[in-house]
Length: 187
Image (cartoon, rainbow, N blue to C red; front, side, top):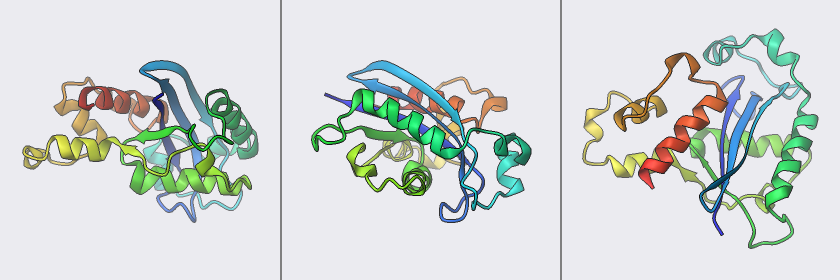
């Protein structure tokens, strides 16, 4: 059984050890069927550094993100979703994490989110290796790579003929839409 956990994060900066998450969005796809979508706004960890430039990218204010539900509440809601589809005590039952450029960015933040919620069992939910659509696209376009000005998700999507609404970029829920479409076209 193929269990895919598409996800994207929006953060208060680019360093997972200093910054925090303010949005977690995703979709659960099992054997090709969309089972569930989610979009959580999250008040970052109280010690997280909040950088104005990062908030500008995400089109949010510090006041907004500090009013979001506390991370322990969101963590419990996330675990409730995960528990519907995976038995964390079964070593053969896990999700594949899927996203765009998640190996270098999202995964460390996501793991830190679990640790900040005193959960050291991230690996009980997810396989250690991720399906990074950035890597899939890089392999797929290896002979055409020089035609790209950059390799951002929106650039790859456009190259594949996917319509991109520039005003919605850097909203985790919208970015998941693009990622899922890229994944479906490349796999």
